[in-house]
Image (cartoon, rainbow, N blue to C red; front, side, top):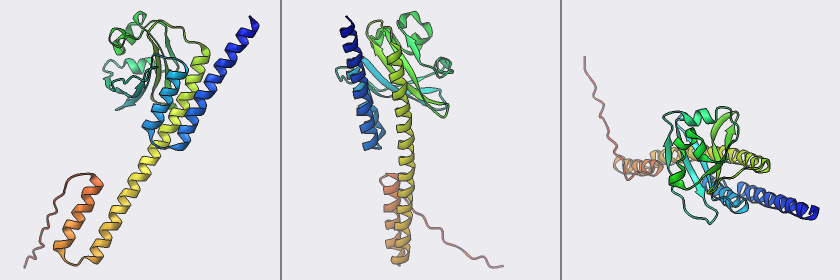
Length: 233
């Protein structure tokens, strides 16, 4: 009996270690947030055998929460959608920034307002806040089709993973900001080169429009010149 319990413990430790290694690998190999989130959810869904795993990020001053990525244990596709938190239920639930454990969603009236167990066919959930500097960024959530009592080990593992997600979001934000600044400097540089090398205004303006259009990812732009008129007193 003792040998069986020890083997189960070692197997569980091995699964948790494997999940964390996969997350560490993808976090160190890419700055693309969606790729990182998808890998995290796939590792959790398969490793912990959860029916549904999702990462939700808060938007617009915490009044809207969007499911950024979601996966089932069989890698089924899950629709991505946003929930308007008009009653501020999400704020109330996560105001203490502590894990939320619901063994049966049907027994929790507030949670049922946000997650309809009849429509998603899930009846239990564990939700762990994703936090950066005590500011809520979102929620890492796992769900089961049946009622389920989540263990402290599961809570601890998801809490560690939530910190990895927070770090990934920070890195992705920095990457996007730096890339945007570099793209802007590149456009300014190209326009500056054109101004000094193209003397004909009829050739210069289309070139500037082309660079501006590429930067803003639009089909075209219009430049209008206003001629200066000297007034004689």
